[in-house]
Image (tube, rainbow, N blue to C red; front, side, top):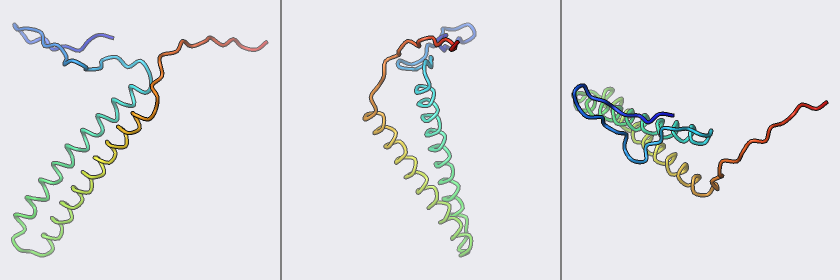
Length: 113
């Protein structure tokens, strides 16, 4: 695969950061990249959900129903954050206890006669 880089018009080329994986050689690396992306997306969504709940709480104006909705939204954002952190911890723990396998050559299989 080709390395990812950004070339600015009339300027230098910006290389990818060190440790940036641009090649996916096996299913494990694809799944790992997908999980990392999902965790980042979940964290960003949780942040916006929390901000939305905070603004909803501020602008509730003392209305009990709106305050309850805002509290519920903030509580769900906090629970979502805890779930994302637990999922990240479990995936990191699983990565340490599952042994890494080297790329093994695939033996061709012939059809039985």
